[in-house]
Amino acid sequence: MTSKPLHVIFGAGQVGSLLAKQLRAAGLPVRVVRRQAQSSSDPDLQVVQADVYDREAAVRAAAGASVVYHCVNAPYHQWPTQLPPLHRHIAAAAQNAGARLVLLDNVYMVGPTSAPFGEYVAEQPCSKKGMIRKQLSDELREQARRGELRLTIGRASDFVGPGVTQGAIQNPRGMQQLLGGKTVDLLGSPDQPHSWSYVPDVAAGLAALGQADAAVEGEVFHLPVLPPETARERLQGLATELGVGLQVRAMPAWLLRGLGWFSPLMAEFGEMRYQFDQPMVLRDEKIRTRLGLQPTARAQQLRETAAWLRA
Image (cartoon, rainbow, N blue to C red):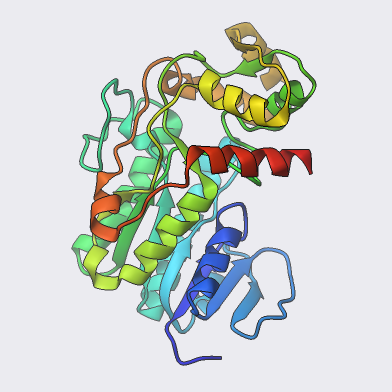
């Protein structure tokens, strides 16, 4: 193991796995904490099995860390019971190690807004999930204000890109419809401008925040995003790359309710529909200006996503 600062990532999913690659490419020693065991041939990439719902296990997993990344999530319908211990145990792990916590968060706590918004927009959640997110972020921010936790927050919008399987437009049902030449069902209007967070850019943003150290401590950053485009425009670009036609429709409320009988995940989507029936546009000038980050070009995003879907 090198003498460089250790970066510990909780979560080996669609963002955490890419984040580990980003940090290793920068020559940093990395430890990934995941629920299932996995080996690594890289001596500077440890993979540790731990149940983060066990506070002491989380604390042990982060021992020696300089930076801890929280990239763990829970299924939508389990947020009320599962998100609070995840946040609190990972925060405790960072505190115990004397590490800075870099939290991957979303924008659910913002609530409805028709204008592009930056990091200091008023937080007025209108959904159960938004209220949970705000409550947990407030807890961490209060700990930081009291000097008990070193904290940086990176916020992303709806995920797109290779590996995304539970996104608003990139989900198994929608992608099967797209690849099969059928009408793609969307959660809301196909024609409202929306910010889409490309997962490699989310990982790159978190890696940059983790390496920026005290310069970003106590702050919130929107992770890099391209200028907004509608769901129709985004899917049309993907359809063109795939060589298929595109038809889209806003999913009727009755269909969404019906799917909810068979899928707890789908049952939870209804309250988030407001994000797609009006503009949802993030401003990311702060991370571009402060850290010099730029999002991946749209053509490359679509090309890489299409290649993954084909595979």
